[in-house]
Length: 153
Image (cartoon, rainbow, N blue to C red; front, side):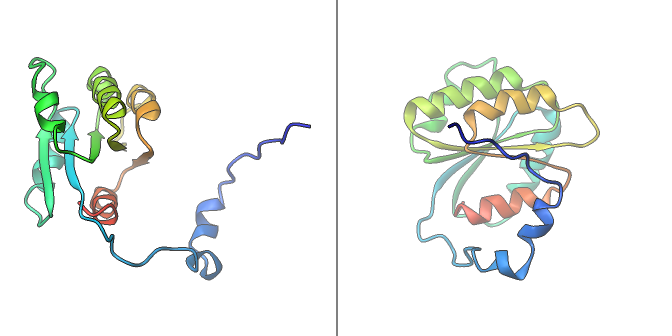
């Protein structure tokens, strides 16, 4: 008999903040510093990436996707072991797919963050979903910093 899938309940996020669930949280810093790339997929994301680049990070490069220049991606992914793609609009959906496929081919862990700043983000989410092990849709830019910190960027 096939298992039935339960829907995600709205209060699931609230449960995750309880003391009982807190016992499962990993509070130790990452043991491994990653060689990371943070890639803006559109102009709004480029502003976020520029702001992130002013903060102290380990081995992290901040980039704006250049769909017009085909060789940029291979060069930038050569030493990377983590890639975060950031979108604030649907403009970069095709680029997200290209980056995601190349990361999958190289075995690079990926994350996608869609900063939902009042736009219909369906295309951006759909483009990132198949390629991102972690996909977060948020309005809070601080979530980007949190994810990067947690992965050891």
